[in-house]
Image 1 (cartoon, rainbow, N blue to C red):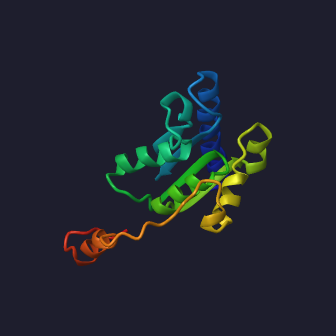
Image 2: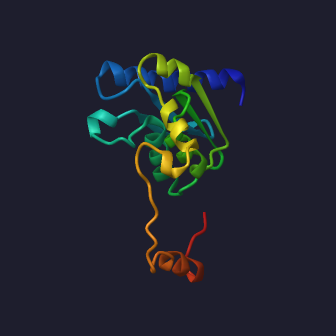
Image 3: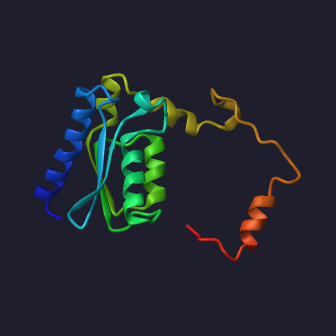
Amino acid sequence: MTEKNHEYWMSVAIREAHHNVLNTEGGPFGAIVVKDGEIIGRGRNLVTSRNDPTAHAEVQAIREACQHLNHYQLEGCTIYTSCEPCPMCIGAIYWSRPDAVYYACTQQDAANIGFDDKFIYDEIALPMEKRSIPMQQLHMDERLLPFQAWTTSTGKIEY
């Protein structure tokens, strides 16, 4: 794909973000998933309009693209997003396995307007006992039961 094509697709993602703000549907973020020169997934930040903290543009676009492909991975696809993905979206991106991701604005650009996710990066780096939200393992006897069933399952689809 040429640089010119990348710029075109990025402009589409930016328009998604801009449209979202103008229509007060959510935050100033937009994303698209492209495969073989076609948009197969679009996403806008809908966190506040859906009361869903996971409704980020990248996650929305990934969900739509996976439904379009009837598959849980995005091999052969490219994601264009109006801003550098947050830690949650980075996780979703890696799980969906696109070929590449291109972004326009940076983490710092987002922080400059009040969308600062640095605290999440900082929290992830901390030991569990030092995180601001307590996280503690409960040692249940049956805790490994689902994993054992998965290991022996003949119907599993590994990913």
